[in-house]
Length: 298
Image 1 (cartoon, one colour):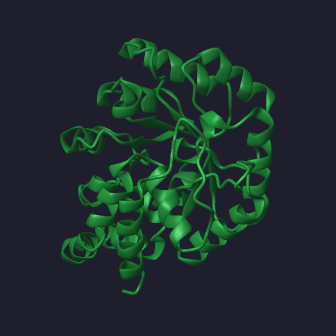
Image 2 (spheres, one colour):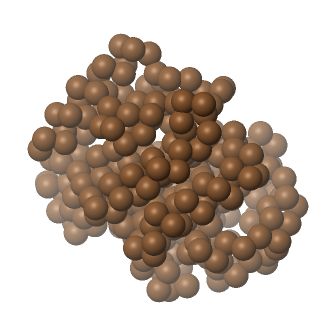
C-alpha cells in the first residue's frame, strides 16, 4: 500500500468518456485522450468518475469503456477506477463479483442524496474496505453529494483500514484540508479534488490533485503541481494565475460540459454529452476556445 501511495502523488486527471455523434462510446477518442495526457506528463488517470458521466453509462458500456482505457494506457501510468453508489450493498456486491485487476485503486465517492450521518459514512466505507484487496481512495465532494465527510471520520477510517490509502478532498475548505494533513497517519494521501484550491492544498503539504482542468492543459497543470509540491510557491502561483480564468470558464455551466468543450476545441474528442447534461452555450464555448489556445502556446 505504501508503494501505491507513492505512485498516486502528483497530477491525476479525472478523464471524460468521449461520445460519438450517436452518443455511443468513442473508443478511438479514448486512445487519443490517453496518449495526450501521458505524453504531457500526468502521473495517473482516473476513469469513470463524475467527469466521465458514469451515471449515464450502461453496465456493458462501463466494461467497454474500461477495457478501452486499459488497452490505450498499456501499463504506462496507474489507472484508478471510480466506483461509487448510495447503496452500500451494491458496491460490495460489485467488488466481490467483478475483476478490477487492471486498476491500481478505486475512488469511491460518499453516498449521495441519502445524507448519511458520520457513523453511516464510517460503516459504509468499512464494508467497502472489507470487500476488496484493492487500495481505496475516499472522495469527499459535499457540493454534489449533500454530505461532508469530516476529518475525524476520515482519519478514523485511515487508522483502522490498511487499504484506505487516501482521500480526494473536494470541499474546497482549506481549514478542513489542513486538519486532514496535520492529523493523517503516515503515507495517507491528501489529494485535492478542487482545481481552484489544488496549489494551496499541495503547498500545505498535500500530495497532489485529481483534476478536471488538467485534462485539457496537462503540461501546465503538471508544472503547477510540481512547483507546489517542491514548495516553490512563487513559481506555482505565477503559473496558476495563467489558468485561473480557464478553470472558472470550465465550471461556469457545469462539469463535464466545460471540459468537453475544451477538448473538442483542441481536437481530442467530439463535444457530445448525454442528458441531463448539455453543451455549454456558444458564447462560453468561444471564450474557452480562445483561452485554451492562448494557454497552450505558453
